[in-house]
Image (cartoon, rainbow, N blue to C red; front, side, top):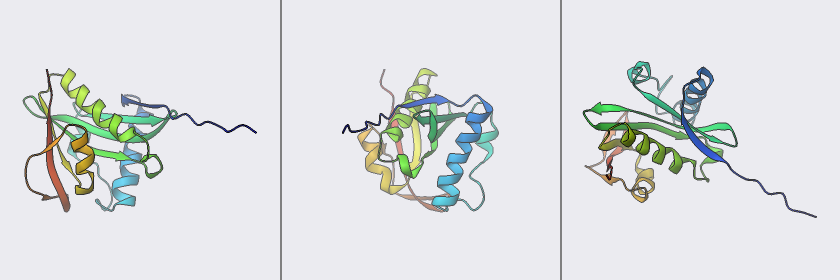
Length: 154
């Protein structure tokens, strides 16, 4: 009897095709509206309509399983937000790949730092990736969040 081996192939890319953008929004809806109830009907906002906003998809074995959104906040400061990974893929490393992809993408486009509002249970995860807290926990989209940032190294 042989044991089956499941290989997780995780990758990230900017959503450019309509089906990638639809999958991006579907993951966000599943996590932020259905699972967590952070938003009542939709988490889509004005940043999604801005053509400069980058919508990233993370895949596991070719299927979109996680997402993150990033955009220039001001000058060389980028904002990363709407990081979401479907529950069945949270035990893997997809969230880490998405955060690192977002940081590398912003740095490659001239960014010097990235900021984010992080749900408190995820603060340690971000600290392990080089982020640091920039202030006290605050109310953001109706829930407690920790302001954090990462400064890009040269």
